[in-house]
Image 1 (cartoon, helix red, strand yellow):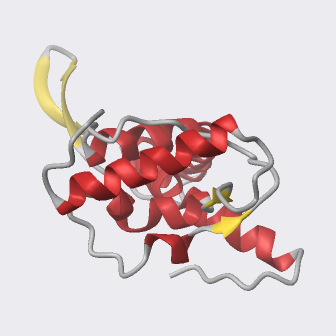
Image 2 (spheres, rainbow, N blue to C red):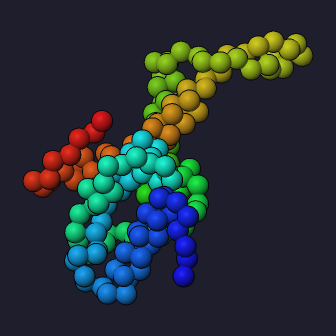
Length: 172
């Protein structure tokens, strides 16, 4: 049996025992609770912090009969590793697709002359080295869109889901 050395260790032990009880007794509504991905991903996964000062962790969860996703993690893993794993698991494909679409749009706008040249590169023009204008819009817009979608996808998905039901949600 493990001994809890501090208050945070006792919380971890209590949550672990509750999770183990839920796994051993499937369908037990009293111990089977869920948390939305948007709630977990708020503010860079602050709920994963070992010294998070939530007034009541149970207030974030709600009773459920089934899980859409069950993401298991070690209580000892760093907060950023958990957050990065959840970003990869839940948001990577939409973020890459959005970034690719933004990059293609930036390319089309540059080809048609709507976006001005952005950046310089040293090039060899007729034997002389001189800076040539290039367009870095594709990389900048694609990368920024990918990152923005990566960190906000869970909230966007939750917001879209709330418009189809009676559940109320917010973006910021």
